[in-house]
Image (cartoon, rainbow, N blue to C red; front, side, top):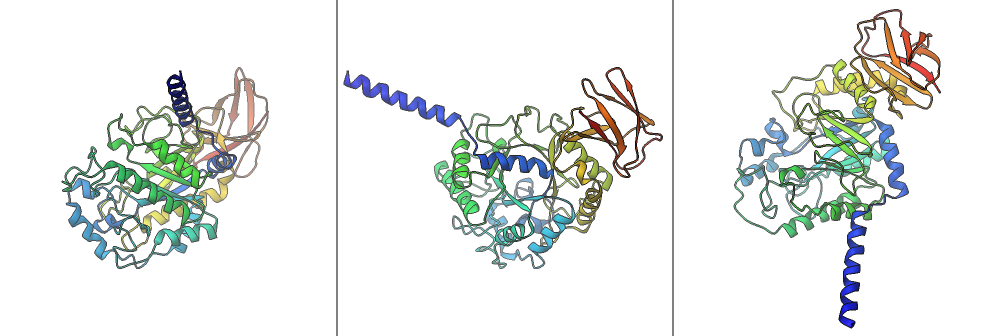
Length: 433
């Protein structure tokens, strides 16, 4: 009987433990930060590391099968003499962005912060000797910009990232380490990122896709560790699947939510968490000297508007040069977005996707009783809006507040624009109740 009781209580404790492991109850601070994250709508993604010296993107170590020991020598010459955290944050603010997400450690394994877990970092391995993450964090806090840290789950250099994943197989790793030490290494680095740099808005993971679907990354342990240090910190994982327990946001790589044009989001069912789309200005995340195929100002503004209309943030990337400066054309594009937002920001910031789903002609955003109709592609001077069970009190052009005539029809209204819209985004504000 005594043995039975011991066994019963052991099983009961295991069951309770499993149940507790499956439930994640975000704190009030976390829920508040989720709302704030959704309100911000626009962020700047920064991919920067020693790979910038090769000027061929952040995957060059893998793509060119560079031996990890030879690749590590890049750190000996990394000296971004023109890096200025104040300039970066000022450029981000001029773009109208509200947060920065930067690569603290990418797949090449090089840490862009002063970590004590490995000498392979910007402070100990380069002649620069400065912790740019600390400088950036201090400047973000000073200028009121939220800071998010990108963190790679995979590592092309460390022997204890084992078994080897789908990538990095040609970089000369022959040693076999212990996954447990790698997992602890990640926990220790995350502790540093969450204790040495002030309040962090989010930890943004990447790389889960490197291992088979059934591989046990022990993600929940990682997520709980983050929340134990900063309960309000959001956990976002670019894993291309439906949200997992313990996460606070869902991101889509090079796709608007619900689309799969890039091929990354085939199984990414849209959850109920705050949404984000990350995208490149050209075709590269890291600095690529030959990739000058930048999206036009109009394309970028449309992407921002479409993201908001799909109830998502836009995280638009820049790959700084090895000297620590943003490419001139990227700054120009960001400034154009900022200029547009200075006029139309009210129709983007603090909004949610409108009750009218995205259409070929554009999208809608909503704030209170105001429905902002973003007309991006219309070849007519009138527009039908489905308004079932909605009462429309007034309509006006957002830019000059001039009234827009409308006709009530079965199931909605028809806006009489009086002309075919030819601006980047013709916004009509419709008052509904």
